[in-house]
Length: 125
Image (cartoon, rainbow, N blue to C red; front, top):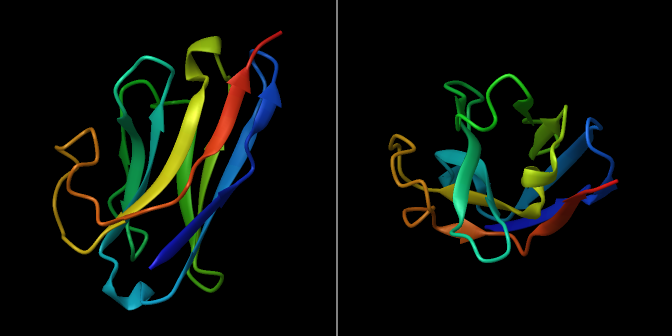
């Protein structure tokens, strides 16, 4: 499985961005897919996730009410719509996928099998 993120960039506080993650390869093996982020000097953390079927979305507390995860199964792409962005959202955002049907309890993504290279999101005025 290969994952390629896009859509990062510089945005002002209060602005919006939509990240995309295009999956290819043996996508039939994916059970769930999600977005993680890592800010400078901080541990990687889960932002949002969803089952490959598109059901059961999960959001970290920091993302609830502002971010929306969605899937386009035809395009084999996962999106993260981010609204009302804050400076503390600045981080490298990674797409990750797992073969296992588990809850999003490992918030650092230690149970994910496949990772993209990340896309940088900078929220600054």
